[in-house]
Length: 119
Image 1 (cartoon, rainbow, N blue to C red):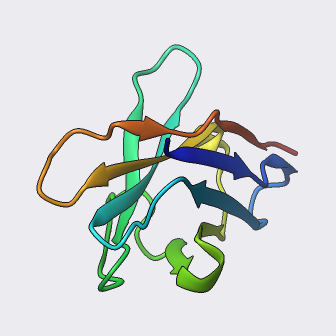
Image 2 (image 1 turned 180 degrees about the vertical axis):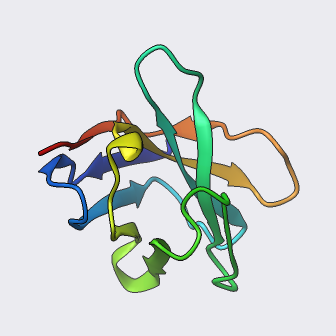
Image 3 (image 1 turned 60 degrees about the vertical axis):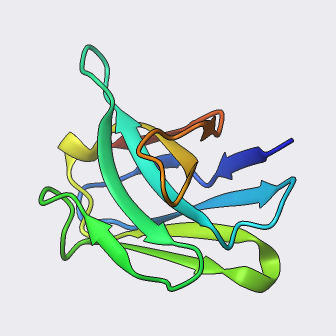
């Protein structure tokens, strides 16, 4: 059974930084794509970034490109999202997710962690 546990959210001032973590367990993830999504109040969930667990190749939404960095530590089975230059519009619940490389649907989700950017 795949389990994803995302942590690291909190309250930060505009321009500040946070690092989210997603601890993955339950299987080997070499054939998986791992991603981060977010959902702000009253809005639909949106894609933030993804990473190939095996190759480390990454892809970002335009809204976070240059400010956020996704990475993974294979030895710890953990994925990260380093968020810099945070803006109030980054406020949302952030979720980590996983899908098999050959599929398009993310089947596994973390419980979510709240990020609030406010002065």
